[in-house]
Image (spheres, rainbow over the protein chains, first blue to last red):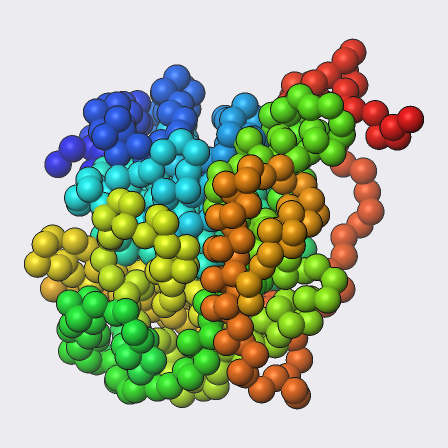
Length: 476
Length: 98
């Protein structure tokens, strides 16, 4: 096995036993990036020099017996997350030269444990998309079939992990941006409960929905990363004070007697592919063999989730992205008046989808339309959240497909805005409710494309979804 | 609900976006389609339903109002990130035009 193919657990063990060095491990990943990135376009920035320097320091730490949980383990970060002294563009040219002077809190925590930063992953600009085709740095290709998308918005992160360019990656999930690319690339991806991980240093998209989480090769790796990243942060007032469970230990507990709900609406939804449905239902059956009890449940407001999402997200987007106006940082397009400086810097620095969302959001929040759109969406959001609460009184986790279909062809949905929005139909409800969702591989289609199974848990129910996911991983 | 080119124009001004004629036509069409799709929310009876304002249940999160030091060199990095600077000041267009 090549070093770049290792999981966190395997790499930790090998590094601690001195079977290989952190420099060798980082070099193996960098070599893989150099070989494969021209084809897949998973990275916008690759930090060859600093990665090797960090790895050298990691080797010294290991030699001194001072290794942290991730000392010497190479990772990649979505470009919409700030990394100190490493360019962070958000995949939009308005930030093509932006070098943050600080690390996002989650990145600082991972680096404090010794993780080695390889570079920054391509994504849909500012997280706007479900196919990674809205990047101003070009689309990302799926490692399983290069004529297909890697998913989005954290598509570069998913492709990088799936293609063994790094050991793990950190993405951001507002409405499926970790889970859907994880499912398209055959990986594990966790959207945590809103408020579980700090959002400080994440380029904000929809502040009431944004979360940061891991894309990993195994559930055990995702659990390790969550244990490090989770917790209250003084710099993000929406982080919750609840103690962080030892997820790494929690996942080992038995799933015997775990009550798994199967929400009927997710399997009856228009547009779900038969093959995806069959693969997911088959995988769910194996939960029964593990001793879980299965029962059908109903979430009738599921059909409104996308409409709620595409009011709330563009509205919050249009407000958040007002900060990018060519004045304080980012690129400025010279123009005659101050207004034209704003309008032209934004016109040139944002891709089509960002502009589309700014337009939708500005319209939805404008005088006379606020009640009909934003307020009504926030009310229906309450109904969706209550419905989940009621169901979680009867079951411990929900099992659904992550996406209605496997990775689609590049360009297939690019010009059909609604079809692209509907791609996140199974990921969005949990987002709207602020609860966790984990995508784990369920199997592959006849054409060899990965299909993901999503486990949704109640608020702060990461332990339950990770535990169920971990046990599912061991079944064939 | 169909948006007119005039409505698109005024939303673009509010959003501080300079749009080409082609973009205006395209967004008029696409925004209309999105708005038509989200109209289904009107079917839901929400008379007695409160809006979701937040999902964490946290209230009155405060911290001490204290000045904190930042790492040395950050000031220079922030200045370096300005689109234009002049003697360590951020250079901007005149705000009040004569």
